[in-house]
Amino acid sequence: MEVVVERLQGHNIKPSVQRIAIMKYLMEHRTHPTVDEIYTALSPTIPTLSKTTVYNTLKILSEQGAAQTLTIDERNTCYDADTTPHSHFLCKRCGRIYDLPCDDAIKKVVDTDMDGHEVQEIHYYYKGICKQCKED
Image: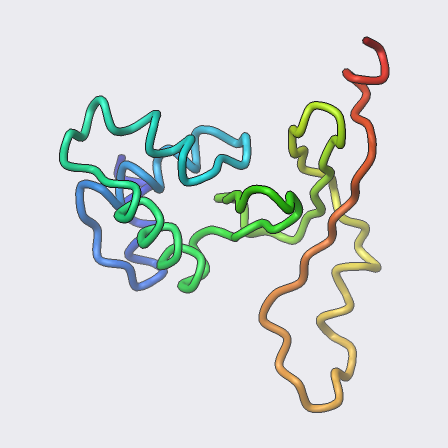
């Protein structure tokens, strides 16, 4: 729990019961959950939690750099507590999102001249059929 509070405070986010629970869920469940998935998982233990609170908290976490918003899936916005440079792979068959390592050369894009623009986010998305679905 202490790690979660420190992570929030490190990103200038005031810890609350809901924010701590949502950040903890993201850090423990590396499944790239949606607002609905997080709400469904946490609402039984936090009766005052609303989907709006989950959505607003995830927005703050994303804006402050404590989590990232993934738009790889056109149907759902997903969230990831891992903010280190890495790629994501979406299986077009089962819908799961997997983390993929990012080549060091790709990470260096941040160091290139962006014609005066300030790069704040970089997303690398891949889509196809995951190895589990290929075996089925």
